Amino acid sequence: MNESEVRQMILGGERPTVEFKSVVPDSRVIARLLAAFANGEGGTLLIGIGEDGRILGADVRSLASKVSDVLPLLRPEPRTAVEQVEVGGASIGIVTVEASREPPVLAEGAAFARIGPTIRPMTSEDLRPLMRSVIRTKTCG
Image 1 (cartoon, rainbow, N blue to C red):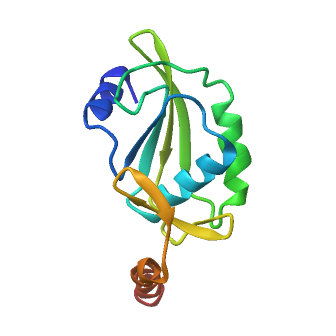
Image 2: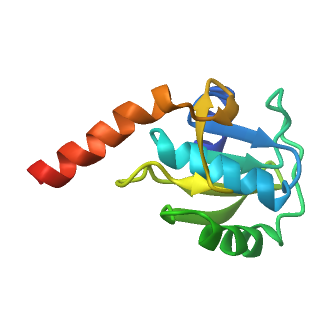
């Protein structure tokens, strides 16, 4: 991702596929975010961006190792990519998560969903369509 692409993403604001964090969050928050993105359409976590979209920059040196530490705790492990981009002289950490081909992805033994710009545990009602999709894929594909 380049500076222009990051700026465009910021202009779109937080939404089901984009989350802003001003600093590198703790492992629990990262795990839930990655699971929620993987259980939906995929998504992008931008570190060093305020909730209002201001470019703050962040010390993102620990981001790649934190994501690597969290991935084995997720089942199944989603596909991710971690990178750093300079935007207006500020370091922005980027974690991109692909939508899971085998949802639900569990974090802490629970499935999470992204509803608008928030994350919440998935209910049985949320899980039914995911499970139907997986069953259909396995029997037809």
